[in-house]
Image (tube, rainbow, N blue to C red; front, side):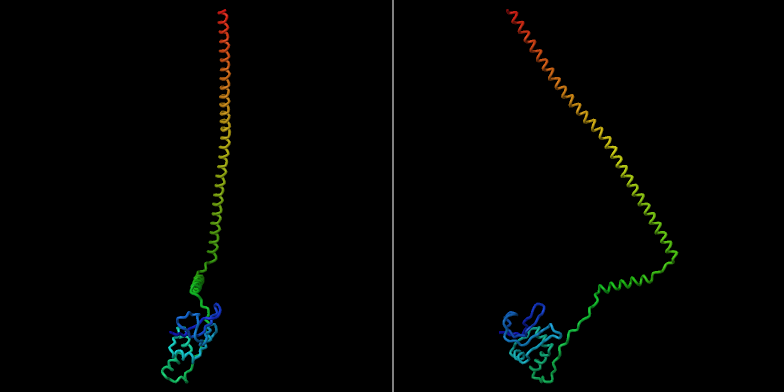
Amino acid sequence: MSVRIRLRRMGAKKKPFYRIVVADSRKPRGGRYIENLGHYNPMRDPPDIVIEEERLFAWLSNGAQPSTPVQELLSRLGLSRKWGMLKRGEDVSHLEMPKLKTRVKKEPQVTEVVEEKLKEVLAMEAKEDKMPIEPPAVEEEKMVKEEKAAKVEKVSKEKKTAKKERAVGEEKVVKEQTASVEKPEKSKAKKDVKKAAAGAKGSKTQGKAEGKKTSAKKGSSAKAEEKKTTKGKS
């Protein structure tokens, strides 16, 4: 069985707390362990590290292998050096254990983007300082020219708007005239169509009356001939 000295995570979310345990390497990280050798709390400043040296050295002498995080902790506490001296049979009484250092809080650094913007602003200010100051007469001439240019632009805009309004008015007049001409023509065409329809109806009625008259004449002539024939026979 291969035995390892490793960290077992404890604590809440975003508040880690570790136990330094001796466990079988085939077991999962949160599984059973053989012995608890100490603890490690990285949330404190300086971090809190407590390890039982006698039990640690006993397991190391029996062949237990520390994991890389545990090796770092042992080197920070000076226990890895002490274990090496003990294996070589050297005296460890005069050995002083190092103290854990507090974390140095770094001051917020200015990002490169902000530095570039500051450089640009400084360059613009330097250019403005170097710009020559024009005399007041030149400034007055510039103001007069700008006013004249603004007046010319206003006049041109007014002319364009007047032209547009005239064109729109002319289009309206033309449309009204065409509508007034088209209306009587349409009414005349409608009247002609009505007259033609009325004439067609009159011709049809006249033809019917004439047909009736001819049929009546034919009937009377036939009756007269029959009378004559009856008289001759008698």
